[in-house]
Length: 142
Image (tube, rainbow, N blue to C red; front, side, top):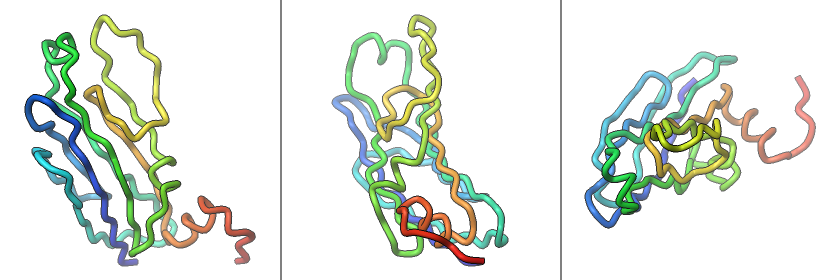
């Protein structure tokens, strides 16, 4: 079942551009995020399967944590088959890799990736059924 996924990312930085790996299903792209940009993926998952959409923020050094300089990524928007809603982004969770001095607080419900770590959103196929449930559009009859 052809599924088009677009994700809009924005860098938050006052030093250098953040690095990340974006994966949708079985396709991964590594990018240096020097400006806000849309990334587009076309996947063909099987009906009834799940697809992970992940953004892995990487490369932030311990020195950059300690200087409190801005170096983060925000996930601004997710679009699936031409449909976008802020609630799509809100369904994801960020699993930070905390620096050794920071207590582990587990996964965070945020679209702001200030630590190294992975943000993950899992959708089910067909995506329209998943969207229907997330948006609370009522009953789905089989």
